[in-house]
Image (cartoon, rainbow, N blue to C red; front, top):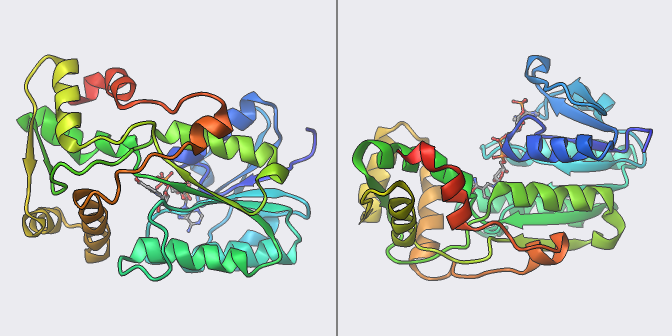
Length: 288
Ligand SMILES: NC(=O)c1ccc[n+]([C@@H]2O[C@H](COP(=O)([O-])OP(=O)(O)OC[C@H]3O[C@@H](n4cnc5c(N)ncnc54)[C@H](OP(=O)(O)O)[C@@H]3O)[C@@H](O)[C@H]2O)c1
């Protein structure tokens, strides 16, 4: 493709950078958006543009008629306004298609703010005249590389509040591969919503065993009471809307409601989703 057919929001983020690499490798001319051009990664076929989703005027040069958009912004209290700003410019400019990175927990009536925000943004797309595809991923395996890896490294312990409830966590590189496939062949995915999971649902006790096998040392899983988990997160300075979001996901997993595996990733990618075992083996050094 010679003209810029795709615009990527969230291009410097964890999913965005993976999508960008796939587009660059495939020689797809792409416009990548960042608030700070210093963060731009130099890649063939990728043109960077500075814009802020909070500022509709700055969004004008990011979108052209007929383009396909990848719409992602981070979990925040401003997510609805930010993404609706993009949708409004996309409508005015007659963009061809929006691939929206949503959430597996999406629910416009949810009490937790992030699931509700994604629900409000999805509703705005439903009511627009744009073509769209919703990607609704489960929790990312990459989340394990933050606080969880830290307590494994320092205490050989995982603290969660999910009992033995399971969730089919997904490697975000599979989300990126699905996004790439749809951005480059949008028509067959028009007005579809895909729940994206890994190939198996696992509990944190199973994750602890998997890490222990991989690093050759015991790892304990401690099942906290929700109030204890809330206190730990508050002590780390997490805002209350984020604590509520994390606890709502945990409660869903504890209750067995998250024990669901979708076949969307293997169907779209024509290969199995990445596994917990492979992920932990690949990132073993981060747990030692
Ligand atoms: N973590 C999970 O388990 C999980 C599960 C399901 C769904 N999700 C969803 O995944 C999304 C987060 O994805 P991610 O982890 O890939 O994000 P991320 O790594 O936090 O990256 C966020 C991106 O958004 C851009 N950005 C932030 N504010 C912006 C603004 N005002 N204007 C323009 N760009 C802005 C950042 O770019 P610059 O800083 O360069 O501007 C960055 O590229 C959220 O919507 C979340 O709800 C997460």
